[in-house]
Length: 393
Image (cartoon, rainbow, N blue to C red; front, side):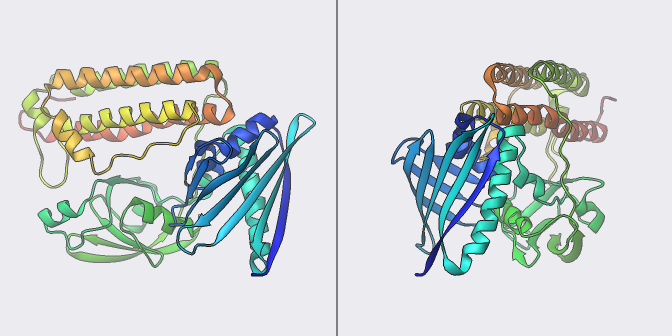
């Protein structure tokens, strides 16, 4: 095969050690370069990179030194091999990064363009912690409910795979197109949607402002709706460790207070009541929040340790909920308050020595928490309003 060596370079406003860490760590790689990474950070250590679109590359680090990192990987599908080397050199207060890759001659220009974009994404990550790849992705404005083939068969759905919509953001792209909670999305832009990874992969082929066709089921009715995708907005965040520590304490105090107000006067029977359709009971909502906090504990500690992020236990959630709904309501509330306080403690501890990327993600966690809780506390209020002998909130 006729090949060509591609070289791209950029100066980053970060120390060489910080740049090397971002290039080699599974967490860093999964922000600026790919969507999932496993990295044994040592000479001849194993390396695996994955993308939501389905590509998977496996191999090893062929060089692992402070000033030079290199890998050799093989495509899991085609068997094609790729080699990439990173040379790092101090330049002023920053680091000059030079990337050298071997590409088929006919693809060299495309490979060079992708590495220019990747270096820009690396620069954003090491200096501000921003996930530029994520911010470029368009938004549908949806939450996702658990949807398994077993559920589909038990409830007589017309399809067994897809994305079942949870809450739909009022001003989001999905709502504007007419999609609603409970709809099952099975296609986007001509691509089949069988679950979350395939939906993300389908969205990755598009940009904000584009209009794509979304295929969905509402009961036994097939829908084909044009959806105009919206851009993501970076949320306002605390700008210093001191401000973030104060923000996480304030946020946690507020959530504990709101949780108490949402549950006060509610009986165990009311909290366990299952409404019709796919709605959770109050206890199931609380169990979901407990699972979310504990997933957050794992995510935050892995982030601080610069390790690979965990995967949300989608298929295990119904079992988790079934286990927790058997607890008395007061015990479930106490468990959730304890988990909130542990989240707060982990974030404050991680702030002690957090580089910009870690600080950014900690700040993002604090900024997102009230949004997530708003949705589920609204669920609790609606369930209380519809329960027999409901206690006003």
